[in-house]
Length: 314
Image (cartoon, rainbow, N blue to C red; front, side, top):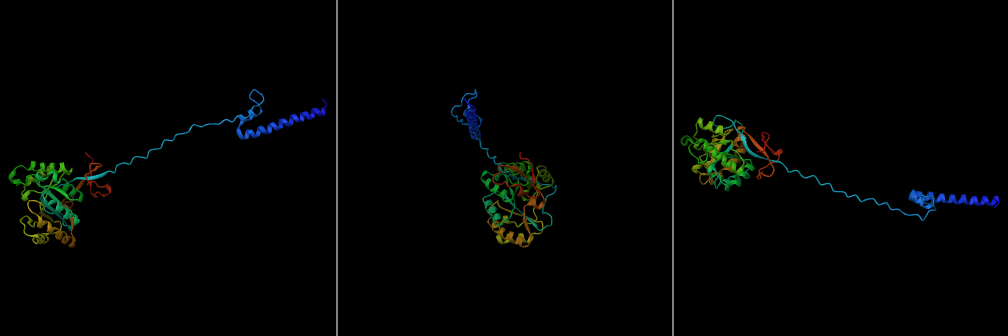
């Protein structure tokens, strides 16, 4: 074979190789090196077979949803009593334009109506209770009083004359236990029946965490003098820091109930603030945190009184 033919043949070979290389480059760009090798030849250098398409399968990734953070229960605070003090019987508070009202001898059939009256007039009072009358039937009323900001006080268990009974400690302890068992509240103020007491009574009460409280204004509402007479007697006797005694139990108390909206309005018109006896005397309330056992009287911490004492839950 002559040289021209050899060159032509060589050129053909070279051209064929160039064509193959161009094809290889295109395949490499499109399908990767494995396809290119198949186009030219196998790994053993043999002529390539038809291109084989290889599909890469990536295992599906399962994503587990992140659970939403559980909502923490709201912590509320329920009142449990107050910190009283004093080795004398209180008859009044500081000479400020504040007045405290105390209702004695309940809980009784008229007591829920007294609570409603106070709610309507946006006022609070201190209820001195007879322990043997503190029954389950009044639990809702007592909790309502606490929710409204009223105070529960000790008025002995059977309402005896303590100077004659000689059983002061048990009279006070049994009443404390009765109130606490229904409400979780421990009284911090005590009023002796008939106002009869001596230093021994005061000391016994003090040992139980109770301050002895009397009064400076007495309209004698228990004698049923009439609504107008009760109003007139209270307003005539009030001075700054006064403690008023009246009754929600011990008999029919419709006259007293009817008198107090007028009394409260008149006192406010004179510039008086209506407070509870512990507030008047500067006794600090105590609270504990509660979550489920708040009995409807729990409040957020932001709404606690500024002088509140927060104790650990038992």
